[in-house]
Image (tube, rainbow over all chains, first blue to last red):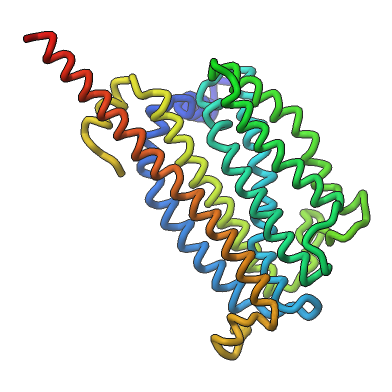
Length: 256
Length: 64
């Protein structure tokens, strides 16, 4: 317990719980994070759209994968982020954790929407239909409703704390949907194709297609972090508006 | 390059409509995700500044 490593970790954890520290540190991170994310996004888009080879079976419509898979991936990762924030917020009563939950909900909802929309468009030339009540697609639709439900609950109470706690409980209960999404293509053999990337096996696609896909997944991780931090900064400003450091920040007129 | 010409690139081998619609709507959503907190932060800071001005005027008024 007394090791320096533990002390450093504990110190970092306490600092993360401090809105002022987070706001000031993230002011320094954001320009770098935005530049790297946008650079990788342009690189990934050009690679996926123009340079990756055409698919022998699906033609060029398969290029939708470079947005569809990363968005679906992060829509689920985002749900874990929300669930962890909800547990920390409920158990340790950490207010920053509840604000993370608020910052993560609309972000996850939009990513789930992108996943469903790009999937529907991709389905038309590939399967001949925009929509089927397939297990994978239906469980993703439930994920979208979970995100929207969390957002609605957060603002459904006069007292914001009650809204936060109720939405945290809903998030944790909704966790049951995540393994269903993962396993849906194995449990029910339906229209949706199997997973392209598995941790235990080699990818089922050619390396020239797999590399840009991996780049886009990394980019979406960064994009997720970027938007989450930006949303969290807004929550911090809104809740800490009466504190001395926010008043000074506003007084200095720094709008950037 | 997987395409011979710009026209071929935009046509996407007959799948242009699907590819560009999916990319267009998805990228538009991502841009909104990035812009929304920027605008919200600006509005919040302006609101806080305004509140400060009101408080200052009140304080000055009380002193006179």
